Length: 360
Image (tube, rainbow, N blue to C red; front, side, top):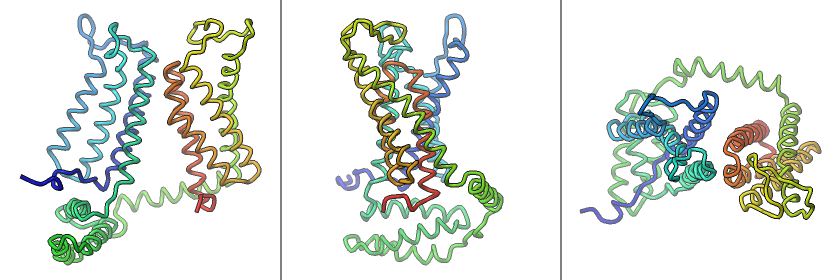
């Protein structure tokens, strides 16, 4: 029997990438599914006595993903498994409302927060995977063992060869495991003698000029001032929409009998303050202020401050406010997530294009 060390989990080197891919597949699947059902008026697949709910297809994809991971060891397996798990769990969790209510209510208000919380949980797991320590002997040995399987598939790609050699060098400096040091020392000449692909494969040879052309087009068509202006416009528009939360928050605490709040086609009784609405309104107000201040900083040329505040506001919305918002309006939170993610990508692209604004 192996000791506790042998049974302790070892993080995969590509864990963060794979889990992020699960989150992306999950989110895209939920959004596309809800959009499709809304556009087709929620059709019943099967007809008559039977209804093939999309949770069944989600379970099938989860099974396919699990069997793929168990049956094969190729490089593409982790990607295929991540897509199957993400899409399958998205189809399954999307119907959580039917499983938590006695009346099988797909539209129960609690469903959207649960779906969104699962999405955030997967993203959180990706962050934890990214921060996992990989300097321990066992972790280094697992990484080298996995990467060394590329030797069986023929010529190594230059990047894979370099990463494998770095892993061997790191493993060779572990005095606590002389057995692994000896293994790394013996394997290094094999890796050094292995054939290596040309720096540009045929596919890379075709795509690299295309990527370079797109980057040149971006530089010409979207200079810095245009990119900044688009980022400012997006921050202002989303900030003003988010500031509606402040209006709602003030209305909730207003004693004016003429002030009415309509939520989901229902007028709230005077003096009532639903907790989810209070949290969502307060959060949206904070996000609105952050985005408007970010837009002002960008207009004044304070790019570092502006982009940082913009990203903070969007992350607050994505990681917290939308959970409460989903309880109030499931369709609205889907739109909000798509718009906020688009603006976040725009802000991150700005920071990538102009790295001097990134914090040191």
